[in-house]
Length: 162
Image (cartoon, rainbow, N blue to C red; front, side, top):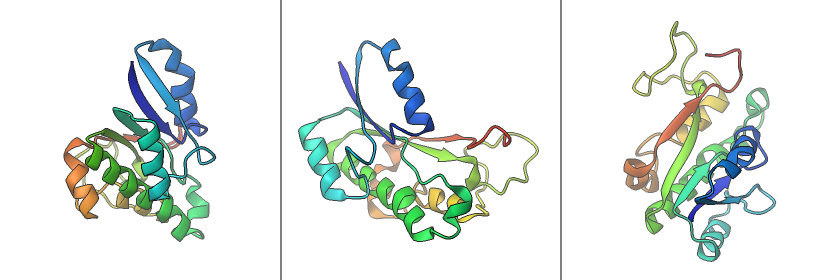
């Protein structure tokens, strides 16, 4: 069995992974949300991984209230960037593959085609800026070290954005 930690398991993406998990009998999923694991707490993350060794972490956790983030920038930054740094540091230290979920809000929204990974970023909202801070290589030493093993998957946050 391949052990996989899914953070943000009660959110939209985490719930979908949970729903599909039964289709993958060779994988052992550890579904967590803030009640089980506060990924903003470095010690909690380290302790959890000590007790539950995994080969992969899929970070589905995020502060996704786009409009509310404008008034709660510090909270959004702690979750979208700070927690990503913590997970990247632990992943690097333990040689765990980290998959971090991004958003199209890291772009300016002006493109007439779907965005590509190498398109220039230009977030227009606090939410987009905090998500970018959580994925940009070199934003912290931990991220710089973990970047080569840290795929970023970007998905539209809502169906009205391509």
